[in-house]
Each structure stands twice: as C-alpha cells, then as structure tokens.
Amino acid sequence: MRVSLNLIGRCIISCIFVFLTQFALSIVPRFFAAYSLLIQLPLSALILLILLVTGKVCRRFLGVYASAPALVFFNVLFIWVVYIVILRKVISPLMGIVLNGEVVILIIGLYIILSSDPGFVTNRSSCSDDRSENSSPEVEVHFEVNCLHKSGISYNLNNDPAAEAKKRNDGSFSSRRARYCKSCKAYVKGFDHHCPAFGNCIGQRNHVLFMVLLVGFVITEASYVMESFKFATKFQILDETGQETSLSENLIISTMLFCLLQVLWQVVFLTWHIYCACVNIRTDEWINWKKYPEFQIIVPTQPGLSSDGRRFRNPYNKGVLCNLKDFLASEE
Image 1 (spheres, one colour):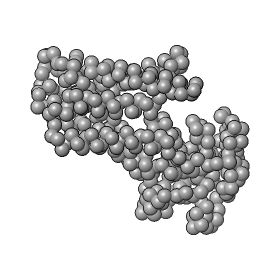
Image 2 (cartoon, rainbow, N blue to C red):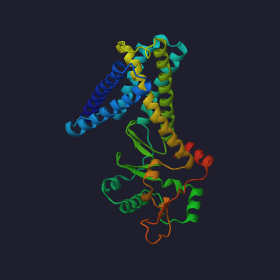
Image 3 (cartoon, rainbow, N blue to C red):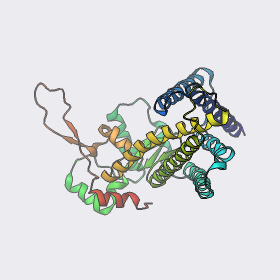
C-alpha cells in the first residue's frame, strides 16, 4: 500500500512538473515572437535546462521525486491534448488518423517496454547484495566472474583467440555478456544501459523494442512538428512581429519547439544505437571496456610513456550483416 501511494505521489508530481514545463516554454513565443525559430529554439533548450536543474535541486534538498516514465507519458499526453483541442481542426482527416494512431502506439509501447524483461539473470540475488558500489575495476571483474560461474555462465579471463572462436560457434561466447545494472541491482544479459525515461534496463530481450519505440517517437514528433508548422504558417503566427498572440497560438509554437528539440537529440541517440548494432557492441561495453577482459589486448609499453599497455578490441564484431542478424534474432 505504501509503495502504491509513493508511486501515485510521484505521478502527481510528474504531472505538475510537465504542466509547469510546457507553460514555461510557452513564454518563449509569447515574449520573443519577433525572433526567428532559430533564436527561439535555443531559448527553449535553455528553459528546459533550467527546469531540469531545478528538478534535481528539489529532489536533493526537498526530497521531492518525480517518475521519469510518468514525465514521458504526461508530455505525450499534453501534446496530444494540444493537437485534439487546437491543431486537429485545421489538418486533414487522414493526417489526424495517422497522428492519433502514432500516439496510441507510443503509449502502448511505453507500457510494454516498462513491463518487459530485458534479460535478467536469475540465481544472483546473493551476489548482487554483496557487491560493493565503490569497488575498483579489477575487483569488479573478479566479482563478476565469480557470480557468472555461480549462475552457470562461463567467463574466461584469458584472451585466447582460438578459445574465443570456439565459443562464438557454440553460442557460449555471447552468453557471458551479462552485465550488472546498479539501478536495478541485477545482472542483465546483453546489458546496454539503464533507461530512466522508460523505467527499465535495455538488454538482450528488449533492445530491438527500445529502438523501434525510439523510431516511433522520432516519427510522431516529426509529424507533429510538420503539422504545427503548417498551422503557424497558415495563420501567419510566425509573421506577427510585435503583435500579442493568444495562449493557443503560443502553445502550438512551444510544443513544436519542444518536439523539435526531442527529435534532434533522439536522432543522434538512435544513430548511436544503429552503429552499436552494426559493430555488435553495447553502450556499457563501449564506455567501461577496461572492466571487461575480452575487450582488452595487452601491448608492450614503451619506456617514458604513461600507457597502461591495454588497447581496445571488439571480439564480438563478425561483420555488419552477421552483427545485425544476431541483433535482430530473438534469444532466450
């Protein structure tokens, strides 16, 4: 019961924060209508950054917590309401059906990925409880090896190319890519990263779903940007220099700028994940490769250099086509 009340409280805080954010963004077209969208866009980004810092301050000093998935949901809902109340009246019925369908699919996708199993490894509760948060990379490597052996997953610390080639063929090579998520306090097969926005780890079993959902967000937001821009052009909102605009017109422009900002960073994020799929590497492995022995190759150090003698290599890269086939294949 206490958990439910805590969740409800976080959702209410998230809803309030979304309303404050969206109406704060509407200040930009209200007071900077004489400036172009290229000026209004960074101003909107600045307001979002200020609100983000404010949210972190409230969480740290006031103990007020929001829910990241709820923030995503209420932002989608707010933009959907703006579309239904204002934008729907001036766009074509076909485009209206498309936008409504895209939003519904996004909401369903959010629920699915929030409740999905990313590939949690069982029989590790005792290992997770004993793990030290401040341990060195070397200690973490040996801790992870011991836990993997307890779970029945082989993990060879020796960089033997012949042994690795054999493991690629029999499938045990990829099974050892179970990494520890500090947010979930659990090991996840094919762990890529923990996504606060979707409230779940992204791993072997939901990585494809994550990318499909990310594509869905980009398409939906881009559709909204195009239709809201048509609305602003039709009613000459962007040409009204020095004239006072209505709240509905401000909301159309501010939500368009908000969606445009989302599209910009999401396209970059999606491009990164496509690259990772093509070379068969996870975000966590790319960042923390020094923690994982199979990504290290020892090279002789030269006198006078501060290098530790370790170089990066990707033993999982089997070529773009094979990598994409492995990525798209459903694995148990």
